[in-house]
Length: 141
Image 1: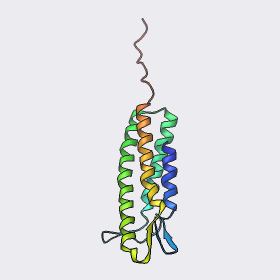
Image 2: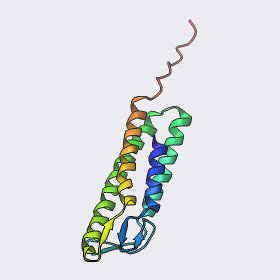
Image 3: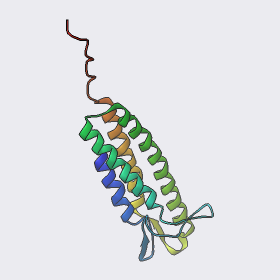
Image 4: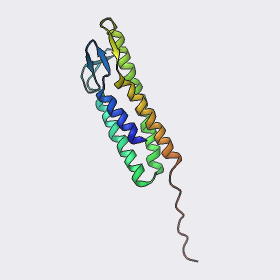
């Protein structure tokens, strides 16, 4: 599920975040303004999150649901959800400030929290379904 979440977040980075008239900007474009602060290519942080999700997903698949990786994955996915909500707030604010020219929030930014929620769900599943503890060797009797 983490691999699917990574694909959703990465797809959302390339799809439109804000559309103005016939022009749209995605997560890798410059010029995002939120609370009088300029943000250039905020999707780069989401792309870094995709790399982390891929690493966690592949590790959990290959190593068989390691507890430490699952816990770190839950925490990182939670932080990713906070960042995704910031992205949505940034794009909604930008679209509101450009509403006179017909700006809309695009689907790309909506996919960010969806991908983060999928990552949290996948991390929790990995946490619950971890492999059973191996018995320790007690020696020969």
